[in-house]
Image (cartoon, rainbow, N blue to C red):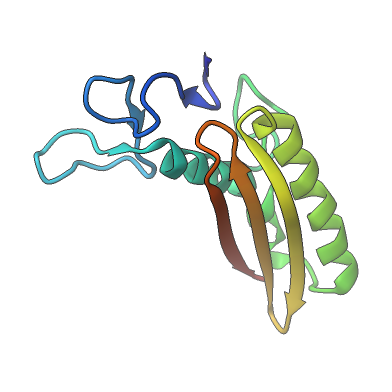
Length: 138
């Protein structure tokens, strides 16, 4: 399966040596001075990060892609905002990465002057559990 959101996740689950390559995010050069690559699990984690921080309308060919977490930097922090963001992130994950991950939990906490987003999932291709946390000041 290949498209401009998920990249190429076919071939060897390690994403290395002779299999189709997953480019690491953010783009950088490795120690060999080549484009850095990522395993399937690392690539999926990178895709989750891109989805969470991309604002809808930011991608020309996918105007609805993204959860828009970065837009909330100047929003007043509240439990209501956290609840709305939780549903927004959960829906975006199911819509855009549902074929790659099984989302176990999305929790958003309004802490003092920041929002903390915790996402737990399982990568379908490898069966590996994954979890990541993002914090955004509000």
